[in-house]
Image 1 (tube, rainbow, N blue to C red):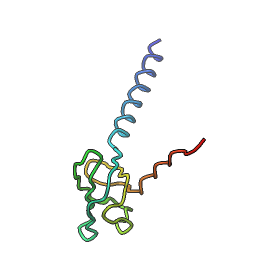
Image 2 (spheres, one colour):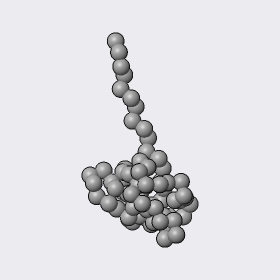
Image 3 (cartoon, rainbow, N blue to C red):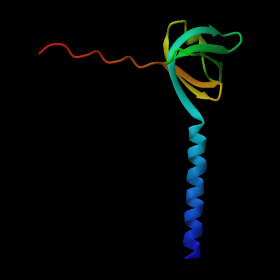
Image 4 (cartoon, rainbow, N blue to C red):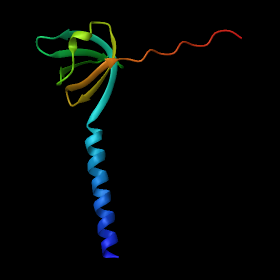
Length: 96
């Protein structure tokens, strides 16, 4: 019985650690306000109207983006770990 309790506690602890690690990443959607490739930063007006500045992480190519582009930014604190074009909203069906 003690072994079962220890195993359950270890498994639950591992699940907690894994969930905390995944929770550190957030996806923010918005429009690019500006890109400073030299400084390695991008300013995005996130949904809600607030401007947020992100430092480009390794492997992020800021040259793909320009002001006005709709993007989804995956962040770890203030670092953009991934930036991709936002998915286009499907057009509403028309007709009978």
